[in-house]
Image (cartoon, rainbow, N blue to C red):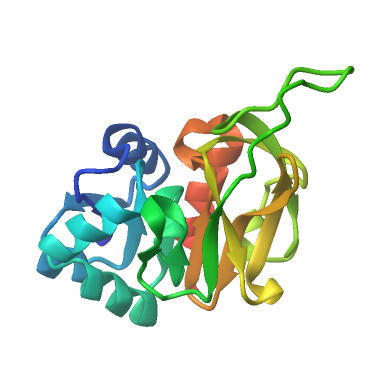
Length: 215
């Protein structure tokens, strides 16, 4: 029986993510674990996350998961979600500057402070960016977008965004005060700034596509 490993380092929305994966992969076991050996025996890996990059990196190192994630990025399908996407990059501006895993070339930057007065035709924007937003598909033929319409709505909660060194790694883009990378793809790695497990039918379809994906 195939297995999908969900990395548990104490900073992920593990309950709803685990339940969502169980819904889409009845023929695949979902293994939520902080044990690198258990996780590396799985066919594919999910790196979730909520919170800050500094705390995330500290926990990954403490649990000896940082090198496991790098190895998974070289050898099997790997999906990052929210903070799990950001921590794959080289460096984050958060907490005065934090070196991350360095799997994907780029930086994590904070959204600029919005103007004190909102536009005449809508509410004032705030940081964090929280709620539903459309995602434009930059790689419309990528298998992860199978049966997901372009400009579908997904659920976001974040104050920082990914700035990729290589635009060719951008799989999807959204806009909040400015365009930003909402999804990336590089070889056997995909990652999403939004939460598929909170994004209703379109998010479930993405998880289904990841379980079926053979890069």
